[in-house]
Length: 293
Image 1 (tube, rainbow, N blue to C red):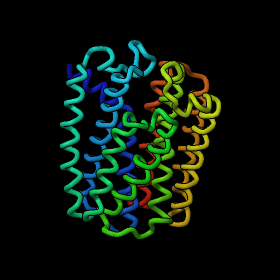
Image 2: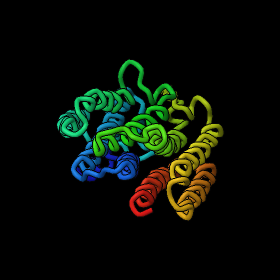
Image 3: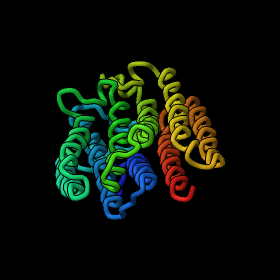
Image 4: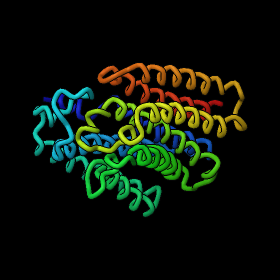
């Protein structure tokens, strides 16, 4: 039973939420501040928020008849009958309450500004899969990921640790955008794999709308732009030798892109996890550069 809940969390995608907090902490350290407690709270809040989003996606896709048994993607516990819809709904509500309480604690460091952001994050967790106009069903999933897994966590993690928005335009925002682009690539792989299933049920992801070839190019473009943004924020501030990390990123990104072009169906599952881990590695590289560079 526990195995099915762990599968529903989609652990391979969780580096996406971790990367935003690590990158925001790198910005905070550069801006002269690191505070361990809000850092750990931000990390916990981000991970639980993503789990809620993953649970909600599974529950509402099942409820709306958008999933089928034996799909090429990761096993869906509710669709396969391993988890009851009522159980999943109850888990979502419990986690939402816990995450809300955790998020509210950040008001101590970030002020009441945290409240509207917390509400927006909660709405995104549900609005991605449900509501009058689900974002993931109308080609806006990648945009939402850039904002809520890139820009928002990076900038807010920086802010709650430093108490100011110094270097917002020249550091936090470009870093947040870079991390968001990397996160959107994880979603592109997911939708690239599921394109036929999504097309059959009328789910208009970007891959359904624009086609595999175009979104494969977007995947490559996203990684290159993300890398250039990270170079921009580091090259004039740290020893140029640190750019070896960006060259490694580009190399692995290119290899993953070529692998994606040659893969079908369940063959893309490992690629999804590797894309998320490459994003995590880039955020960890940035943190190391700022800390000891």
